[in-house]
Image (cartoon, helix red, strand yellow):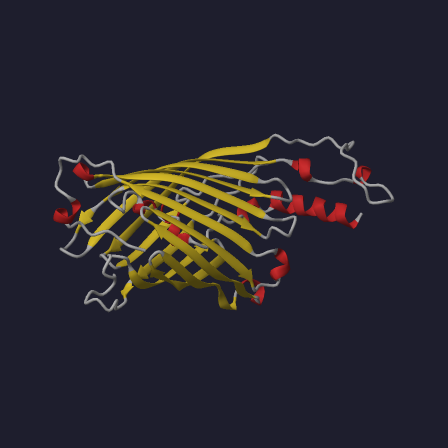
Length: 341
């Protein structure tokens, strides 16, 4: 019975607090560029296909699964980048799920020989719905604790909400540095599933990184005799949505073909209701294989949930390729800088 009551009130909480819902997050935010900021569309000045997958708190019923796939391309003749991204998120306990399909555009403006600015915009179609099929009711339980697959309860499983959304962003960067800001849900669309007014609150993100070139012993900093990268890149992201804010702070070491990293997520100062916002320590291991980058990270939970929650597992993969006209000058002659992170 306690389990039934817990499930019921958990579902009620999700419905009554939609205005406090937070966007999905990726620990490898630097490896989810189009999700982070639409200004990154086409930023490699090549074509790119990427995938991000996250499983959070897999040991709990209230777990979260998030997946995102994207494609972007640089339009050389127009100094512009275009991109498309599809992101889906599902909460395991209540069946609350969302999907977003976004189109992005960014313009590349050369400020100086070394400095470039890129404003970007995303227009997205979003859908949120909930399915109570995963809830357990009293008539599905017996004295042995077994669960019957059939319940006498009649539930509305067709609760759904669709709306359009707008995200704005910008980045400024050199060959080894980038700093950006993005604002998601600029129009604060109504996301309520019950017909009430529940605006989706704006999400602000400030992010950046700086690549420190390491000596290689071959007279060139940042790469060895075969051109393989040797660097350390500190990165950060501060994000705020409604009353919730969070900081990701850490660095990754690139020693091709190996990449390793360490981050801390949280704010070690009292936040809402005087509780410190410590969430996790994040470990990363990845490989750079020619034009393919693959990364795996694990969030070791340090919040009150503890490691018994299962932490979070995350995978990223990206493939770079060229669709340029081979009759045009090689990119080494054009010398257009792009962020490397």
